[in-house]
Amino acid sequence: MDIIVQREALLKPLQAVASVVEKKQTLPVLSNVLLTIKDGNLLLTGTDLEIELVGFVRIESMQAEGSTTVSAQKLFAICRTLPEGSTLRLSLEKNFLVVRAGESCFTLNTLSPQDFPSLEDSEYPVQFTLKQNHFKTLLTKTYFAMGQQDVRHYLNGAYLDIGQNSIKCVAADGHRLALTSIQDENIGNVEARIILPRKSVLELIRLFSNDNDPDVKIYIGDSRFRVVTTDYTFTSKLINAQYPDYTRLIPQGTTVAMGDREVIKQALTRASILSNEKFRGVRFQLEPSKLRITANNSDQEQAEEAVTLNYEGKDIEIGFNIAYLLDVVSAIGTKMIRCVFTDANSGVLIEPAEDDYQSLYVIMPMRL
Image (tube, rainbow, N blue to C red; front, side, top):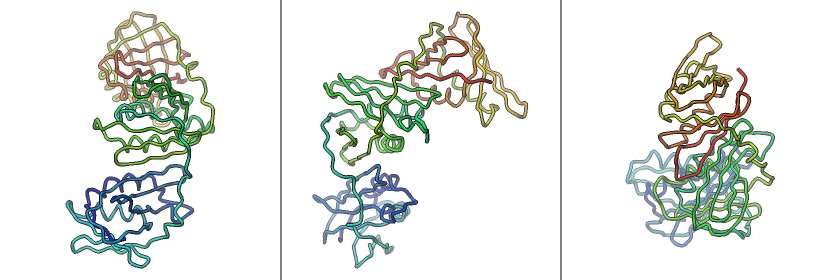
């Protein structure tokens, strides 16, 4: 291998691939990135045996082909700290990868590419295209409600319910639920129900740009999920489990309150300063035209806030985890939000007043 690439062309995909690679691995080669040359591009591959990410880098010129593996973190650190506009020459010399840029020269240890594992090939009977910003929005509006190391492993990810020109994305951890859905004719009549692991969801959010890029291609198999963009191929194993009926968690209350999302968010942010650091509890006192928010902590400090609401129902007093509430009001992008209460022992349903994406959030109460 002896090639020349531009620093900026290499840096972004290398950063994405390095984020997939686990820093501490039982197999040393899993800490490495696989460098291969194909069709005039340098392919960067990283994997943790659950996720595989391949990034594409355009080669300026090539003297010799070849492949090798090298420490993902070290190569990324070198590229990141080199001056902008640098031209890099990567050459394989015996068992070392030599990286030259101007007067700088780095010699990195390598491992055999034959030892680098790859996710076995899989068939993908379900295939469709989707706007990249649609897919990213689906994930960003729900990911925060995923479980973390829950013994119910099916909660440690996002559930995608695909069919009839729509996708529903659901995340729940037993204390809250987030659901967002979109309509897109590109999806067609395909049907699939899958659970994406937590790490895969977080990596996809990082991978997708905020620009309205061309459509991404999505492939779904029995145990694999693949997304192909112009710059990357992302493959993930799926969680093999049956997702519970999330519709049963959606309360059917009739007590409705409407309020300004930003005003409520600011009040919650201020109240959170004096909430209990461990339990994060906050008390809601709902009364006609007003919501009173009270938080206190073990030092007997207390915060009180009052927010004007469009509400004409009965008085309700209920406790919530304030961090969960802040996650929801931060995810919603509309000016007004709609809250539906049942009673002091039932969850609250929070929805945007109007939105291109059909979203809803459920937060269960907590004892204070």
